[in-house]
Image (cartoon, rainbow, N blue to C red):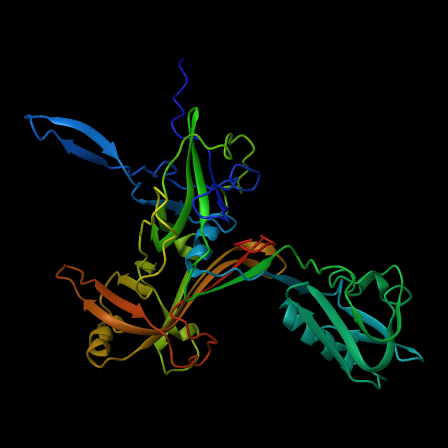
Length: 452
């Protein structure tokens, strides 16, 4: 039996550094899994040359490459590299915050102020670095018999803790009675010896947490300098887009899965790259942790209302979240490709939701539209547990939504549709800490920045 022709093979993505110069996206860990990997297309228009003395065309010339605009479609995966495209749109490159789980196996701190040993007990819970530092200080200050005042801070860049006090003290990492269940290893402190006779102690190594990391993406005013290289194998050829910018995202659902579409603007398509010459080393995340619509929770209430809670849950049958950056595509002398696109208009964030039927809640949207009642909303998609109480998560916060359109279609069962635009909030509404039109929080297992 003849083999089925393999039409499209591997695809890779990596953040690039120099515009219109391909970066090596063929290495391990660069594998990306769009549903349409071969969507890229060269745009290299012909310039007709007319024969001025005869009846026929006499030649065809070529000049600049027009931008190669294309879209990549994904069944969204928590650990997939589509998250790089998400971060490229936001323009965010912050280091991820490791997450920590404290329980009975790692919640003790033995220390001494010069006399008998003291013990602090950290409250069992899930933490990020900053909140764990607060809990450590509270545990030591709550120890019976302590006299000093203790502090603890976390450095997000080094991922190290600093435990300090109002005078010299020792932390009994090695000789303490709770060595086997202390917090040392998780916080980056070595238990090979005590930390003795100083007023503060810094972690010996970066704190590793529980292999779960929180990435926060906020909207940058501009994404200048943030672009990537994309390549796809097509049988014996490798087609490469040396540089691409993410202009538009679309998050929606279909067939029960969360779908992500990334609209990109590239320089050109080449098939003779001296950098991306083989795709054999690519590796991919396991295609099993896909986000599902049943994992999505929408909450919405008045922009000036109370913090979002269980009573504010709404249940659309479909949705489309569309963040969009308007970008130019300019040519300049000395190059056949466009220079790096920049914003030539304000970014916009649009949210459309459709409900299966008109009910007591969504029949009020029409009145709210007329009354110019603004809303706030969050969308949280929670996946499987990574460790402890930390699970995969993608959360979007929209602190100020204005209603643009409401529709109740003519049908046997009257459905409802609402179109809203997210804009900058004057101040963070109750229950939120953000004012940008859109903020995203991602929890997955990637320990490095999405734009590293």
